[in-house]
Length: 580
Image 1 (cartoon, rainbow, N blue to C red):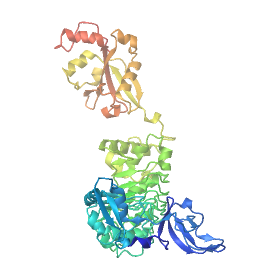
Image 2 (cartoon, rainbow, N blue to C red; image 1 turned 60 degrees about the vertical axis):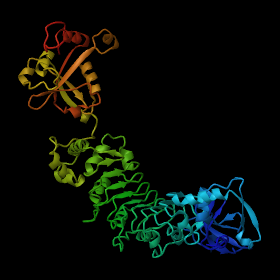
Image 3 (cartoon, one colour; image 1 turned 30 degrees about the vertical axis):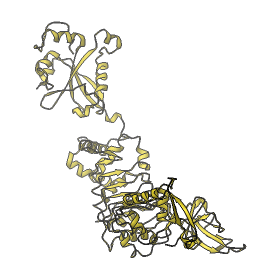
């Protein structure tokens, strides 16, 4: 295309003035002044001064309030460059002296002016390599218009990824004239640009047939334009439309007249408020399985109308919104019954409950198909623990009847069928405190010789032991512990409760206690609690309220002496042994 015609002001033309990009919206006189003015809507709204009005007279309109101003035509204004000119200036080295003299005739001189060109061979080599480029980044290079038909295809036909963000391209038609020349293009970035309003996409279909990824963040595109763009991109799978000041989508996509493969939509940084509007507008995209709504203004998630749930959406990002109630999480399950991953940090709900130990447990229990919460995976065991905890939490609330509990907690009946109703479903006044989570365990000081005889060499399961075998032992000590207490902390608590030596001096003297502990399981079987697995908690071993634990100890130094006498004997009468 003739570049000369792009070097003067024209309505709709894009400009760059000292690094500030904008669009010419008015050319003419301004009341009360002399000469010609350019009315410009600036990409950066802070550069503007008004909405296109001066002294009460309206000259042009702005998409973003306050982003307009008037400037004089000036040589300082640049109108951009062609695609290939930008490409060559960025990717091809400038010629350097090589001792070889070559001349070229300037085309505009009609053969009169001949000049010397040095290093043209190097330039040719570089240009030849452009055809092998797979990715091109021309962001901030002020690309403003395409080149003559066929030139781009001949130069770089194998490009798969193109970034022409912060460009001076004025319309989608101009973009299409470039992408039509790139038959293998799969990803296109057009962020930080401004285009004239798109009213019809019929001229765009051939330009975006193979496109799979499109990013149009901060372009002030509106939802009807997005629908037109998607209709012209039959293979589009990933779409970013963030920071476009979208406040609503209008729910206008329920009956699409085209087929789409769209899988991910990213609405990051907009001003969307109405959850129902977003869901209805997204429901027609049957291949869509991920929606990112980070940093929007969603305050509430109402329950959906009958048969309004969306089964194909499995991943959603709601980070930094305004959700503040557990009802929103319950409604989320009703909207998205197959939800697998959720990011919900930064909401008032999370901020208010971030100090609570049960925020994660409740969220997991309320969303039955969730496999990842805030970037952390949910294991089957964690899910089971969270659901059991949730049942206990609900049973201790002020809700008396199953009807009340089912109304406030939609999964109550389902979880009762799955795990059984909590044993203690009585009303518990007050809040769920740390003390409420403590459990009581009974600790018996047992005969270690009997324990070793039952265990045999190297076994951890001692075998059955009856209540009658416990009777001769001293009365048990009752310890109150948390199920989440680690084995390391539990060992220290046992040593303190049983008044065992644990100081440095005793350890240096060879009197550091050697503890052994066994949990009495159902059926009177005993299973050893392995203190070597310090990070395991009591709940992992199956310790619960009312559990019985048998503990024995011997001085570590003496135990080594005893074992060295006869390794084959499990019970010895030699040496001194303290039994508990």
